Image 1 (cartoon, rainbow, N blue to C red):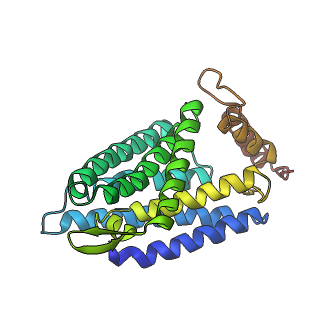
Image 2 (cartoon, rainbow, N blue to C red; image 1 turned 45 degrees about the vertical axis):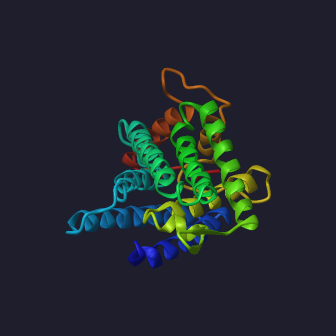
Image 3 (cartoon, rainbow, N blue to C red; image 1 turned 90 degrees about the horizontal axis):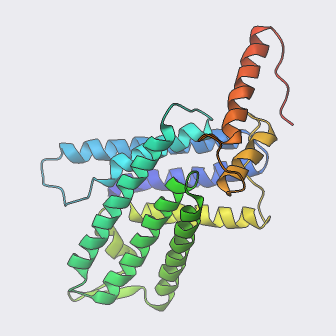
Amino acid sequence: MRNYITFYYLLTVLLIMGAFAAMAQNSYGLTILGLVCYGFALIFLLQFVSGIRQKQVQPPGELMDLPALFIISVILALRLFHLHFPFIEWIFALAGLALILVYIQKMVGTYRQLGPKNQWAAAHILVFQGSILFFTLSLVTVLRFLPLSRFAGGLALILLVAGLLGLLLRSHYLVEGQNLEVFNLIGAFRDRSVLLLALFLLSSLYLNLTGTGILPRIYSDEYPQAYFELVNRAETGKEKPVDGTYQYERFRKMYEQFLEKDINSGGQAPAAP
């Protein structure tokens, strides 16, 4: 895990740079974000392959989150590049469900391993792990089960804030005679929890700042602005799918057919408003 910390840090910096570039009306910002997702996916894949090739026995559950994170990262990249294939939403949901099951197992393991040594430390770690679990649930249910997504996202944010406030009150715990920091305890499980917490915090800040109008939304010139407005209506629950299909999905299909027909006829596609 430690061998990849530098790459995680660089990709996180690029993620922030890409988001600001996209919000500044630079279309290459989405390209950076998509490449960052592919970068995370590659690292998750390399970690998984490296882990299963090691001769020593791996701790239970150490590698179980990597395949799910790989799939989620790839699909997020495909979404940023507006690429779609059949059943992609179901694959995304199954990967998210697998990650949720992994974190349920991690939470049980945290209680069993850390609880007898220091119950307050175990509770603090469980709060952070629970925030990751509910954030993942919110992510995979946003399109089809919006009320559940909102509830899970709100609970995840409450747990994250509670965990961070807990750090202000107590950032060290005595475990087996050692005074250890909370994030050292999380890191002792040798998983991606600290990374996911950082990404969750960044995404929560972005969603809240854009929702209140403090920051502009991410911009892309590949599709007309009306497309992204329809996407926003679907994600915020203002529109219900008809026959399992949202308006933005029909809009995208018709727009791509229009572009293909226009290009084949030698014309020029209209610029996005």
